[in-house]
Image (cartoon, rainbow, N blue to C red; front, side):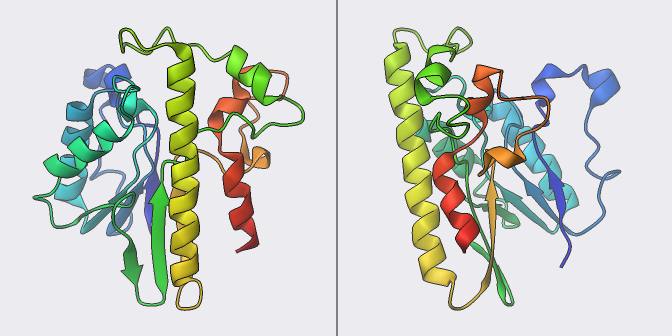
Length: 213
């Protein structure tokens, strides 16, 4: 079985006249997996998801951290709003809320978020949190400590969700896990070497456990 895979489009950062993503032109298979960070704005995100649904037979999606940029006081808000707005599209599957089964394969997913520990021991949790910049988070009145708490709780909740699904399916299906963040520091891009302290903000160390599955 083949899938098209796309991530980190960040369409709101582009000049649309030059860089609009062409879902039809880039289509190779009938199924696309979109692994988050479509846009900072959930309405722009939904517009792109609807475009994908008009081209593909199935659209599988997990939200990235950027979909929650304006809602770090309630990280689940963006997920629930996108889910509601996309509920009319029968070919859309939100992997954070619904698993997708194809014959002997099940696809499960979650954002993953960051526990700020994925680069340890090269970068400590403390160092990573210290360099975490909250200036780009427009949620007024929310302190950095609150944002860190919300993010790490989301990271743990996603870990528990995926862990429970693996237990549910591992004796019946081959399992494909889709996340936005990387599950192991070895998978970090060479653009984020360990001497850059914010590299710890790109993954969830708890997900390393799933390699054993």
